[in-house]
Image (tube, rainbow, N blue to C red; front, side):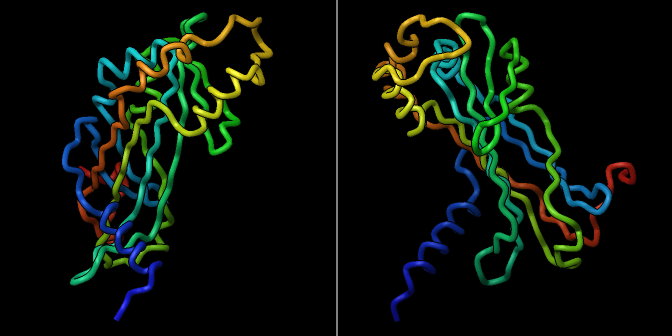
Length: 221
């Protein structure tokens, strides 16, 4: 009996997301999963996100996109674990060589921008320890077995960035806040910068937990 294409695709996605990462050279850590009020939360951080080459290209003006994909999975016996909640966040960062700051665009439409002055401040903003609210406790089965997965991906260039390159070269994009300074430096060396510089990604997961046994941080001895 042939399986429906949609079912086959769903199985492949489940296998891809649920499988442990072969390597975690980003220093990605997940946990603990805790209860804050009536909301299940998870804490995560990344300790070694950058490589020297990534840092070099970022400082030269090449944009980078940082994406977190967080999921709650329910463990199932003799079948694939079930994804019950998925949260995705994306931030695009680039270095301004003229004022030596980093600008971070946040949100799906990147309507919110934050400026940080140093690489250390950028690391804390993007990769420092954070606690993410996930779901009300009542949404999970009290005695079910769950875990939280976090996938971190750092991309040096996206399809949207390539569209921006075309706009710059055609003269359609101008910076209204500053006078023209010619084509940005990262465009001039784009072929060299991209060569051999691929995405960096890591996948980590929390310990298995039962919602009925979750505790608030203040109650943990």
